[in-house]
Image (cartoon, rainbow, N blue to C red; front, top):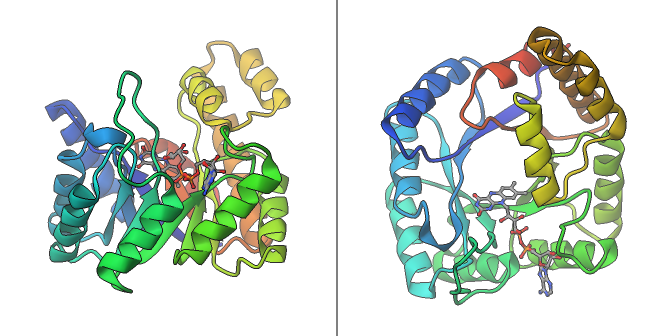
Length: 275
Ligand code: FAD
């Protein structure tokens, strides 16, 4: 099975993290991703890092690096400047998001939702960028309900997005159901599953509580049963995620987008298991 793949990185903040990302990028290059994306901290917390990492991944590693851009906390002028910078760097793709307001930060920004950002990008840059947006098979945690969330997703695609990448999940049926509902609502664009390989289970539980992704109870029980047996946990987690990827691709997923957390091993463990 050789589905098209992409990898997501976050901008390193320390020298140690920079070395780690460099090492990870070198290793993952062997898997010939279609593109790699670089996350963006809402409200400017990694504002100055994302463009640098996008440039580095392009120039040093030869990746088609794709910046994430979130509108939360930013002004129109700041976003306009970033769009110009990314265009000058040679970027032709973006991941456009609302972002989340870091705690303690009061400034909302000029654009309220990701859909407003997509419209703004089209207004400013026409069709230059291929725009990816986020979507949530298990519903965005702040949505009124799943139908309202789907309607907002459809409006975001209609504003000019070309493709969507999902929040991670461990239940393939949630993805298939979401894609079916989106198709019925008139969304034809590719919906790429976001895959989170499991490296640190307690960290994953914290992430999942915050972003509304569900870890099925049976997976938690199996993990707990392994206790401190790290090898068994790694084997089980990689098999589990690889089997889910196979189901997704067999069921029509157009590509796989891996949340790497800047680590090569957990993603490679999944990729090497794909049949
Ligand atoms: P939106 O599409 O704006 O939706 C946010 C909420 O508002 C949803 O509940 C939606 O139903 C509702 N909504 C949307 N439009 C309307 C409307 N017109 N009226 C009323 N309600 C509406 N965060 C970062 O900070 N940096 C990153 O780099 C980053 N990368 C991500 C990559 C992916 C693939 C994904 C899936 C998420 C990423 N996130 C990132 C997290 C994301 O910013 C959060 O999940 C955020 O809470 C929502 O962003 P969004 O773009 O989906 O928002």
